[in-house]
Image (cartoon, rainbow, N blue to C red; front, side):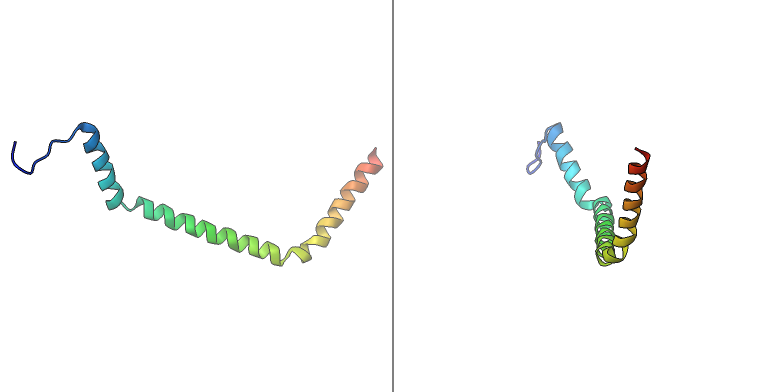
Length: 75
């Protein structure tokens, strides 16, 4: 065996290969970008629902009361 050359087991080579592929690949970065984008969109949707909750409250309560009245009159 030459000096400086180290024999690795199959498991060690597999783990080293996985680390090399992980650090040189860009799939993880793409997944991270998509998750950040989805997070920003979700925050925007929640923000808009929070802002418009008062304008949506009355129509939804009106529908709810109509449903309750219809169920009570049918019983």
